[in-house]
Image (cartoon, rainbow, N blue to C red; front, side, top):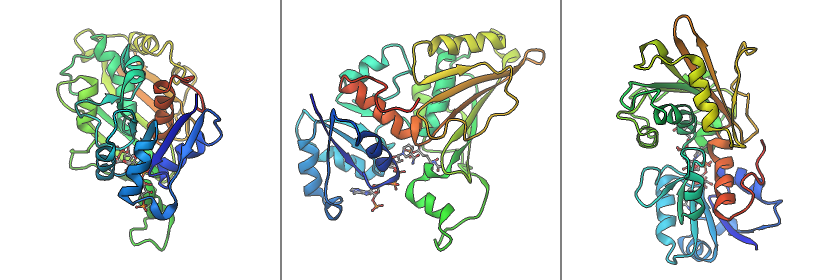
Length: 314
Ligand SMILES: NC(=O)C1=CN([C@@H]2O[C@H](COP(=O)(O)OP(=O)(O)OC[C@H]3O[C@@H](n4cnc5c(N)ncnc54)[C@H](OP(=O)(O)O)[C@@H]3O)[C@@H](O)[C@H]2O)C=CC1
Ligand SMILES: CC(=O)N[C@@H](CCC(=O)OP(=O)(O)O)C(=O)O
């Protein structure tokens, strides 16, 4: 069986990344629009309705428009934008999130790809909340740095193009300082927690890669879990995952933002001081890998009944 796929937004950062991964795969036929037609709603409507699967790599408004242009009940959608991540009728496209999530994705007509930041947060936190090690109303926080391709073409120009109006030579910049980042509802809903975390995102002068973390005062938690219990809960949650790995920390003196750049892996580590009862739960991945394109390819594989890891770099 050939999967007939259209990538709407294929000229953008995420779209290009996905197209390059899928182009060599013989089981996938990529449907394309001429460059002059790629923003023409009538041309897009034709090809969106012709495809078996579409992956939307568009700004939120254009993603909503694309969904409204689909008038048949056959075309299945993976939306990489943040338009539908907490929307009714959409399945959240993080196969590792819950037992049964991959099966739900396999059946779904509409799948919303996770945001890059929520991916690390949910991978670290959801298994601990599910296991009762972290109460659902615990005041969590989440910080980290992203590569600048996380901001798409405009942010790439901002960091790389000295002639760009908004060019910056900064090495590291904190943002989201209004504490209202657009990923907060997504983190709260899918972690199943009572309030959003205090979120401290930053962007660093590296094109791709993410390093994010959740600090946990283990001694203050009701069950006072040992660091080993936290690590064991994560190990158990991802035991069968080819994508998420939980690494031991004994020999790790430092963790680099580039750790998993260029791959579709998500690596989790639990650093702790058993005496003080403090822990840092650290995630590394690529914002364009498991944070976007890798997750979209994984979801396509699952929805189309293909090998879930086909085309992924693990
Ligand atoms: N970059 C990342 O790490 C991540 C991105 N995402 C999400 O993926 C989506 C795409 O992001 P990204 O690739 O970074 O963004 P880019 O800005 O790099 O690409 C967006 C693409 O969409 C095109 N486009 C805009 N409006 C329309 C329209 N009406 N019809 C057809 N095409 C249109 C743009 O064309 P033009 O440039 O000519 O306007 C551009 O090619 C966004 O929703 C983003 O939030 C999600 C996770 C991570
Ligand atoms: C570095 C940077 O600016 N990153 C983006 C998130 C990228 C991402 O996850 O994309 P979505 O817009 O699809 O959620 C931000 O924080 O808004």
